[in-house]
Amino acid sequence: MLTENDIPQYTGRNDWTDTVTLKDGYSVRVNVVRDEYFGEPWKECDGHGPVSDWRPRDSKRPGERVLHSDRNSCLFYDFAGAVALARRDGWGSKGDEGLTGGAKAAHAAEADFEYLRRWCNGEWYYVVVGVEVSRRSAVVGEVDYCGGIESEGDYWREHAADNARWIIAADQKARKAAAVAKRKETIERAHWAARDVATV
Image 1 (cartoon, rainbow, N blue to C red):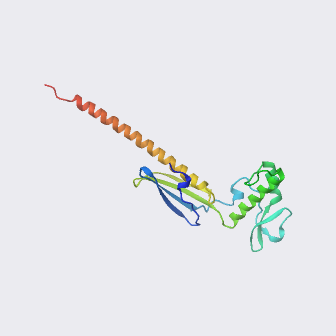
Image 2 (cartoon, rainbow, N blue to C red):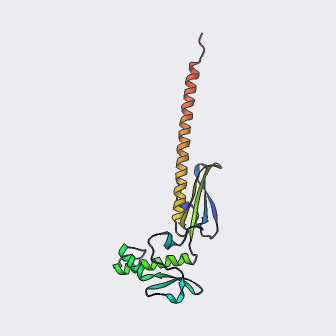
Image 3 (cartoon, rainbow, N blue to C red):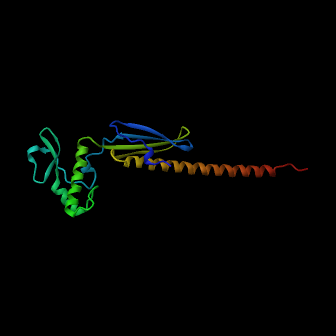
């Protein structure tokens, strides 16, 4: 059965399509396009530290860090506020095993800062993922495009694989039901044909 590991890794910045061939004549076409409508992660998703609007570089406040700059304007990340949120909400991050509460919160805020910084620098972005499944060159199903998925990591591949498996399972169920109905019809035809034998 198809897994996310069967889907090639998307590493480009442009729209991307690839096809995975499976047994039983199935093939899965995965389309990935950049999601131009999904905004900043700190506005679209929960669980991030506070980020300012664009402000002059010299307006940095205590506890803030420059997240991103453009000439004399900056986005500031409220690191102190993020640590407080992380402590209050119990944030965790990879590599924080064995840390005390305060150190764990600071570690999580640092990870969040780096995650948002990478987005600001274009190192990752949101994508829209679509899946089309064919069997012996005939399309058997497709999933509407789902957006707001991170380009980094494997979630987009898991999403594509899950939807492809769902389409394949539905097609196999429909083909099995059609085969059972056809067998039943053949048996009934044979039965009625045998009853129509002329007698003397």
